[in-house]
Image (cartoon, rainbow, N blue to C red; front, top):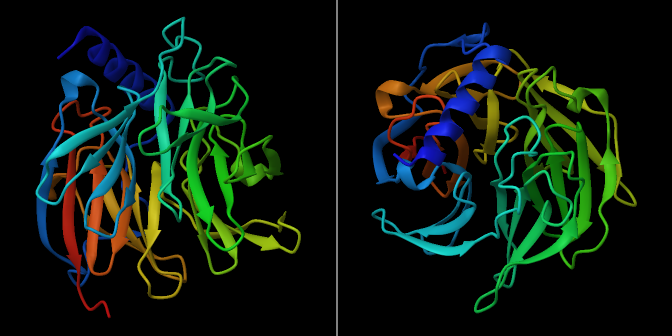
Length: 324
């Protein structure tokens, strides 16, 4: 393992251990009804190269776009696990030591927009690089929206109808919005429910059912924020709680039911519309600090970054049973 990757792992582990309880949520039950089947590891990544997968966006051909946090890269993972680096974001001049909370530069949220453009978030602690970047075929990565250097942009969601992007800031407790064309972001919500309690607050984000849904890693909550006319934010509603360490998530297609990654607890949980949760995957299935969950049809994709386990960052796949 490289000295840089080792330092990053130690930094994340120390901060996480000091600020986050890596425990099973109080209202979570054991795996119930085997909602996931055919569980297997589809790809193993190179920890020594900083390949700690943070976020995922699926393509129609079964491949996946993945951000590697520590190596500042966006990669394409083909069915079967072959990995191809698409872009590497430029390093900050100071090495990223001023990146809030973590102290290293990292690529975070990623989405693919209609037309093929890829958007990725980058946190560096510097004003010249922190923000929203766009990747277009045959072109170098381009920053299209600057974000505060003192923040940590993390989750990224696209409203395909309005072509608005929503960006969570885990340090500033803010959701920003900006059109896919880029420009100056607007602070869409600064509700107290988004704030951290010392580590990372607002995290994963998805547009679903006329609202932006956001997780809060420190508080262990899943929030629903209505999208009002004129792209105004409504009042956040806590839809589920007791999930300290919750990272990114996806909806299953069964109403408001969701699957969510719990990073330090090393679990994926199913969240029912009434807020109850059950564990559907854990370390015995191969999880190593899961960061992101995605779904296409019946196929479930789960990334593990190995931030604190320092073992086998990977892409796990499974089938969602009973899914129509």
